Length: 277
Image (cartoon, rainbow, N blue to C red; front, top):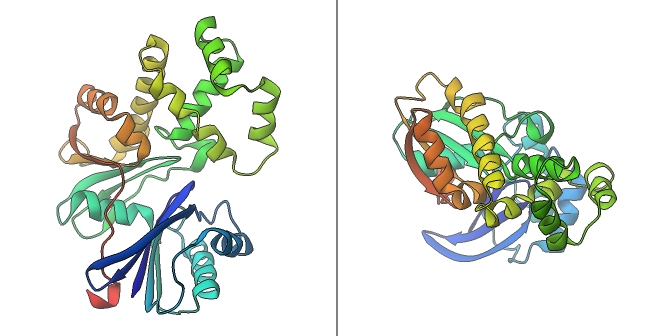
C-alpha cells in the first residue's frame, strides 16, 4: 500500500491506497516545516495519525512550505522516523494543486486556504511561482489575510458598532485575549485565519463584502497579474477560502480581466509515485 498526504498549515489529509483503490483516510494537523520542527512533526503524527503504519511501501507527501529542499528534507526525515520506509517523496502542495486543477493543460493555479499561493503551470511543471511570503509579509487572499484585516478593523474601531458588537458576542473574547493569541501563543496564522468565517457568514454587511473584495483584489494584483500569461489562461483555485468565497472571487476576477477556471474545495490526489510514472 501507498500513503498519500496533502498538508496545508492547518490540516493534513492522509489517504491509504492499494493499487487504484482508496483503502482509508484520516486528518491530522498540518505539517508546515516553517512552523513545526522535526520533533514537533513526529509528536503530531504520534498523537493524531490513526491509520495503520505497517505495510506502507511508499509515501507521497505534498505540503505547504515544502518548496525548498531544506524544508522538504525536514518533512522527509520526520516521515522516515515515524513510518520506517525510505521510499518517500516530498513536493509542494502547489504542485498537487496545479496538477489537480490544470491536468495536462497550461494554467494559473491558486491556493486560498489558511495561507495563499499561486503558480504558472505549463501542463507538466510549475514554471513560475510568485513567492507568497507567508502570513506576515504576504498571503494575500488567504484566511489569514481576511482574519487579520477583520481583527485590525474591529480592534481599531474601523467598523460600525453593530458589527463590532456582533463579533464580540459571537466569539466571547476580549481585545487583550486576541492580542495574546496573536503575539504570544503558537500558530498565530491558524488563529487569525479562523476569523475568516465571520467575514463569510456576515457577507451581507457591506463592510464585510468590501473587506473580502479588497482582499481578493490584492491577491490578483500582487500575485496572479505578475504571470505574463495571466490574462490568456484560465485561473483555477483550490482551498477552503476559495470554495466559500467563490462568487466574490469570480466577480473580482472578471473585473480584473481574468478568465476563471475551476474552483475545488480540495485538490485530488495523484494516485501514483514518481518511479511509477
